[in-house]
Image (cartoon, rainbow, N blue to C red; front, top):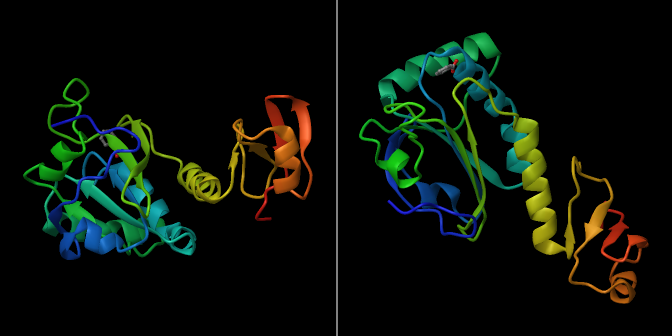
Length: 212
Ligand code: BEZ
Protein backbone atom coordinates (compact mmCIF):
# COMPACT_ATOMS: atom_id res chain seq x y z
CA UNK A 1 0.00 0.00 0.00
CA UNK A 2 1.54 3.26 -1.14
CA UNK A 3 0.91 6.39 0.91
CA UNK A 4 -1.73 8.59 -0.68
CA UNK A 5 -0.81 12.22 -1.10
CA UNK A 6 -2.48 15.36 -2.39
CA UNK A 7 -2.63 15.32 -6.17
CA UNK A 8 -2.63 11.51 -6.37
CA UNK A 9 -5.46 9.78 -8.19
CA UNK A 10 -8.04 8.54 -5.66
CA UNK A 11 -8.01 4.74 -5.91
CA UNK A 12 -11.21 3.32 -7.38
CA UNK A 13 -12.98 0.39 -5.72
CA UNK A 14 -16.20 -1.56 -5.68
CA UNK A 15 -17.61 -2.23 -2.22
CA UNK A 16 -20.66 -3.46 -0.35
CA UNK A 17 -22.48 -0.52 1.25
CA UNK A 18 -25.66 0.25 3.15
CA UNK A 19 -27.18 0.93 -0.29
CA UNK A 20 -25.91 -2.24 -2.00
CA UNK A 21 -22.76 -2.85 -4.04
CA UNK A 22 -21.34 0.40 -5.42
CA UNK A 23 -18.41 1.42 -7.54
CA UNK A 24 -16.78 4.60 -6.21
CA UNK A 25 -16.07 6.25 -9.58
CA UNK A 26 -19.54 5.36 -10.95
CA UNK A 27 -21.11 6.77 -7.80
CA UNK A 28 -19.19 10.06 -8.15
CA UNK A 29 -19.84 10.36 -11.88
CA UNK A 30 -18.23 13.61 -13.03
CA UNK A 31 -18.73 15.31 -9.68
CA UNK A 32 -16.65 15.75 -6.53
CA UNK A 33 -16.57 13.35 -3.60
CA UNK A 34 -15.98 13.15 0.13
CA UNK A 35 -14.92 9.74 1.37
CA UNK A 36 -14.78 9.58 5.15
CA UNK A 37 -14.22 6.82 7.65
CA UNK A 38 -15.35 6.44 11.26
CA UNK A 39 -14.32 3.89 13.90
CA UNK A 40 -17.50 1.92 14.48
CA UNK A 41 -21.28 1.74 14.24
CA UNK A 42 -23.38 2.35 17.36
CA UNK A 43 -20.85 4.72 18.94
CA UNK A 44 -21.79 8.18 20.16
CA UNK A 45 -19.44 10.54 18.31
CA UNK A 46 -19.94 8.65 15.02
CA UNK A 47 -23.71 8.87 15.49
CA UNK A 48 -23.50 12.67 15.70
CA UNK A 49 -21.11 12.85 12.74
CA UNK A 50 -23.25 10.77 10.39
CA UNK A 51 -26.36 12.72 11.41
CA UNK A 52 -24.54 15.99 10.77
CA UNK A 53 -23.25 14.75 7.41
CA UNK A 54 -26.85 13.93 6.41
CA UNK A 55 -27.92 17.47 7.34
CA UNK A 56 -25.13 18.87 5.13
CA UNK A 57 -26.03 16.71 2.13
CA UNK A 58 -27.99 19.44 0.33
CA UNK A 59 -25.17 21.97 0.78
CA UNK A 60 -22.66 19.50 -0.62
CA UNK A 61 -25.05 18.61 -3.47
CA UNK A 62 -25.24 22.33 -4.43
CA UNK A 63 -21.47 22.10 -4.90
CA UNK A 64 -21.74 18.85 -6.86
CA UNK A 65 -20.16 16.83 -4.02
CA UNK A 66 -21.36 13.36 -3.04
CA UNK A 67 -20.51 11.72 0.28
CA UNK A 68 -19.58 8.13 1.03
CA UNK A 69 -18.85 6.99 4.60
CA UNK A 70 -17.00 3.87 5.76
CA UNK A 71 -16.47 1.63 8.74
CA UNK A 72 -15.37 -1.97 9.12
CA UNK A 73 -18.84 -3.04 10.30
CA UNK A 74 -21.19 -4.96 8.00
CA UNK A 75 -24.06 -3.66 5.87
CA UNK A 76 -26.76 -5.15 8.16
CA UNK A 77 -25.19 -3.33 11.12
CA UNK A 78 -25.06 -0.07 9.13
CA UNK A 79 -28.74 -0.35 8.24
CA UNK A 80 -29.76 -0.92 11.89
CA UNK A 81 -27.52 1.93 13.05
CA UNK A 82 -28.93 4.32 10.41
CA UNK A 83 -32.34 3.90 12.11
CA UNK A 84 -30.78 5.09 15.39
CA UNK A 85 -28.98 7.98 13.68
CA UNK A 86 -32.20 9.14 12.05
CA UNK A 87 -34.12 8.82 15.31
CA UNK A 88 -31.59 10.54 17.56
CA UNK A 89 -30.25 13.19 15.17
CA UNK A 90 -33.52 14.05 13.43
CA UNK A 91 -32.05 13.20 10.04
CA UNK A 92 -32.43 10.96 7.06
CA UNK A 93 -29.06 9.35 6.31
CA UNK A 94 -29.17 9.51 2.56
CA UNK A 95 -25.69 8.54 1.40
CA UNK A 96 -23.98 5.12 1.37
CA UNK A 97 -21.85 3.75 4.20
CA UNK A 98 -19.25 1.24 3.02
CA UNK A 99 -19.31 -2.09 4.88
CA UNK A 100 -15.56 -2.64 4.81
CA UNK A 101 -15.46 -5.91 6.73
CA UNK A 102 -12.47 -7.19 4.75
CA UNK A 103 -10.73 -3.77 5.14
CA UNK A 104 -10.09 -3.57 1.42
CA UNK A 105 -10.97 0.11 1.14
CA UNK A 106 -9.49 0.98 4.56
CA UNK A 107 -6.18 -0.49 3.44
CA UNK A 108 -6.35 1.20 0.04
CA UNK A 109 -6.79 4.58 1.75
CA UNK A 110 -4.63 3.84 4.84
CA UNK A 111 -7.52 4.46 7.24
CA UNK A 112 -6.32 2.04 9.95
CA UNK A 113 -3.50 3.47 12.03
CA UNK A 114 -2.31 0.53 14.16
CA UNK A 115 -0.63 2.62 16.82
CA UNK A 116 -3.96 4.34 17.46
CA UNK A 117 -6.12 1.23 17.07
CA UNK A 118 -5.12 -1.90 15.20
CA UNK A 119 -8.61 -2.90 14.05
CA UNK A 120 -10.79 0.19 13.72
CA UNK A 121 -10.55 2.97 11.16
CA UNK A 122 -9.61 6.44 12.34
CA UNK A 123 -11.61 9.49 11.23
CA UNK A 124 -10.10 10.02 7.78
CA UNK A 125 -11.44 12.44 5.18
CA UNK A 126 -10.54 12.50 1.49
CA UNK A 127 -11.93 15.22 -0.73
CA UNK A 128 -11.76 14.08 -4.35
CA UNK A 129 -12.09 16.50 -7.26
CA UNK A 130 -14.06 15.97 -10.45
CA UNK A 131 -10.72 14.94 -12.02
CA UNK A 132 -10.53 12.10 -9.42
CA UNK A 133 -7.43 13.67 -7.85
CA UNK A 134 -7.15 13.89 -4.06
CA UNK A 135 -7.57 17.54 -3.01
CA UNK A 136 -7.56 17.22 0.78
CA UNK A 137 -6.59 14.61 3.37
CA UNK A 138 -7.56 14.97 7.03
CA UNK A 139 -7.04 12.52 9.88
CA UNK A 140 -8.84 12.95 13.19
CA UNK A 141 -8.64 10.75 16.27
CA UNK A 142 -11.58 8.59 17.32
CA UNK A 143 -12.33 10.89 20.25
CA UNK A 144 -12.85 14.04 18.16
CA UNK A 145 -15.88 14.52 15.94
CA UNK A 146 -15.20 16.41 12.72
CA UNK A 147 -16.40 19.89 11.79
CA UNK A 148 -18.56 19.63 8.67
CA UNK A 149 -18.63 23.42 8.29
CA UNK A 150 -14.88 23.14 7.75
CA UNK A 151 -15.33 20.50 5.04
CA UNK A 152 -17.84 22.73 3.27
CA UNK A 153 -15.46 25.69 3.63
CA UNK A 154 -12.60 23.71 2.09
CA UNK A 155 -14.80 22.61 -0.82
CA UNK A 156 -15.72 26.28 -1.42
CA UNK A 157 -12.05 27.24 -1.35
CA UNK A 158 -11.00 24.37 -3.62
CA UNK A 159 -13.72 25.08 -6.17
CA UNK A 160 -13.02 28.84 -6.15
CA UNK A 161 -9.26 28.47 -6.49
CA UNK A 162 -9.65 25.86 -9.24
CA UNK A 163 -11.32 28.49 -11.43
CA UNK A 164 -9.67 31.76 -10.37
CA UNK A 165 -6.06 32.78 -9.77
CA UNK A 166 -6.63 33.25 -6.05
CA UNK A 167 -6.01 31.50 -2.73
CA UNK A 168 -8.04 31.82 0.46
CA UNK A 169 -6.61 33.23 3.71
CA UNK A 170 -6.87 31.90 7.26
CA UNK A 171 -10.42 31.42 8.50
CA UNK A 172 -11.77 32.53 5.10
CA UNK A 173 -15.43 31.99 4.50
CA UNK A 174 -17.37 32.04 1.24
CA UNK A 175 -17.82 35.63 0.02
CA UNK A 176 -14.93 37.14 1.99
CA UNK A 177 -11.83 38.77 0.46
CA UNK A 178 -9.34 36.38 -1.13
CA UNK A 179 -5.60 36.47 -1.73
CA UNK A 180 -4.24 37.10 -5.23
CA UNK A 181 -2.09 34.20 -6.40
CA UNK A 182 1.59 35.03 -5.69
CA UNK A 183 2.47 34.17 -9.30
CA UNK A 184 0.58 37.19 -10.63
CA UNK A 185 2.35 40.59 -10.60
CA UNK A 186 0.24 43.36 -9.05
CA UNK A 187 -0.09 45.29 -12.37
CA UNK A 188 -1.52 42.22 -14.03
CA UNK A 189 -3.71 41.44 -11.00
CA UNK A 190 -5.32 44.88 -11.29
CA UNK A 191 -6.38 44.07 -14.85
CA UNK A 192 -7.74 40.61 -13.91
CA UNK A 193 -9.51 41.55 -10.69
CA UNK A 194 -11.67 44.48 -11.71
CA UNK A 195 -13.27 44.77 -8.26
CA UNK A 196 -9.94 46.12 -7.01
CA UNK A 197 -6.64 44.91 -5.60
CA UNK A 198 -5.40 46.01 -2.17
CA UNK A 199 -1.60 45.70 -1.90
CA UNK A 200 -0.80 45.16 1.80
CA UNK A 201 2.72 43.99 0.87
CA UNK A 202 4.06 43.19 -2.60
CA UNK A 203 3.50 39.49 -1.77
CA UNK A 204 0.16 39.98 0.03
CA UNK A 205 -2.57 41.33 -2.21
CA UNK A 206 -6.27 41.06 -1.39
CA UNK A 207 -9.24 41.24 -3.74
CA UNK A 208 -12.98 40.74 -3.28
CA UNK A 209 -14.25 37.23 -3.99
CA UNK A 210 -14.43 37.30 -7.82
CA UNK A 211 -17.63 35.20 -7.75
CA UNK A 212 -19.52 37.20 -5.08
C1 BEZ B 1 -17.43 7.42 19.11
O1 BEZ B 1 -17.83 7.49 17.96
O2 BEZ B 1 -18.06 7.90 20.04
C2 BEZ B 1 -16.14 6.74 19.43
C3 BEZ B 1 -15.72 5.68 18.65
C4 BEZ B 1 -14.54 5.03 18.97
C5 BEZ B 1 -13.77 5.50 20.04
C6 BEZ B 1 -14.20 6.58 20.78
C7 BEZ B 1 -15.39 7.21 20.47
